Image 1 (cartoon, one colour):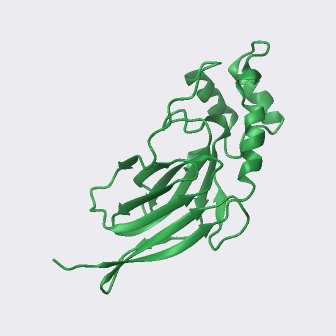
Image 2 (tube, rainbow, N blue to C red; image 1 turned 180 degrees about the horizontal axis):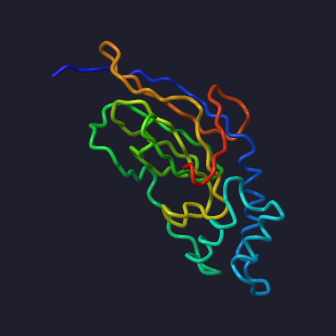
Length: 204
């Protein structure tokens, strides 16, 4: 059996003002906001939307659905283990991917096939932790959701979830006697060599 060496491409993702969003999200979506005078989910969501308090990409209808599944005062779910992985592809995972985070929030990362847009793998990363996974060879998009309170894979981090996508194509391939891989750093400062864009929940 042929032996391959791993070759990493180090990438630092631009993740601007994440703490700013988390700070203000904690104000807008703290339990106290729903402890006020009762009103319908639509009224609450429309009020949040009109004031610009919903994260970019989260619509009023998605807000209503979240509140219908998560009654007022509901507590977040326990966090998944760091590195908890779900594979959607039957391909053998042989290419290395390392995700490094800084303290400030939790991450739900999704690898999506570049052509079909179908999910290949998801994994959960704790604040300030590193995860190493082996992924199947192929070309992928890297999307990630970030936040602080976990509500499960359908609602992720609730109404303050920040959805993003790296603009680079991630190509995992065999190059000679090496398997190319990536080391990605999610940092909380405006510097790096990989840009990202905010996306809607429906595009995640």
